[in-house]
Length: 301
Image (cartoon, rainbow, N blue to C red; front, side, top):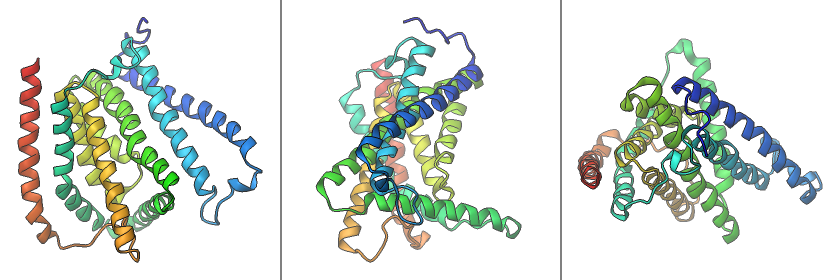
């Protein structure tokens, strides 16, 4: 199919992407709500006092959001901007070796991610911004409470849904939108691929509205952005994103069942000096693997 919006510049493509996201969100959320009505008597939509919807309905709409906000608009952008639903946004046959290296880069970066998380959680704004800091903390706590309600289960069927909802769909959908659409669009707009990577990583972290985990998510956004830039294939950042989310699930359930008195989603308060014992090897290994990834990908042409 002809790329009918290919003539638009970076800013034009960005505005059209926003239009696709908003339109898709409203249309498919409405359809999802209508589809859910026959299966509920209306009462099961309600949750607790602090949660307007039941946990099952929240899971349902979280999955709908993955499609309506990320996957469907990205496929349409690939078609309208670059002439193909999937190849337009970077889906190509991947190298097994580079997939494994993408996984390894994200896995080995976890000590650095953890360090950035602890550093970020200790952030304090100036006193005159106390109101803003309080709002940021409340936003963080609300997101943590919702995620905890999703994860706190031992039912096999729900565990499978959580795996799909948290490890698979965000890895595919968010990478399609951020690395498959926004990063190349920003590259067209600013004529600089590195600016595109950094700006996309900033939006990737900011859109979650979790300010006390902004730094680790920003770093992950950079790592995934450079996997896309150097690898020229969307499967590599998807693999890395999946590795990060899957490890988060494993860590949550490990601590949930070995130490049920704590909430694994709460950022730790470990000594930052001790963390450097693991951070420095992490930086060295990630740097080496990133260099090797770039070298192998260039050799493939």
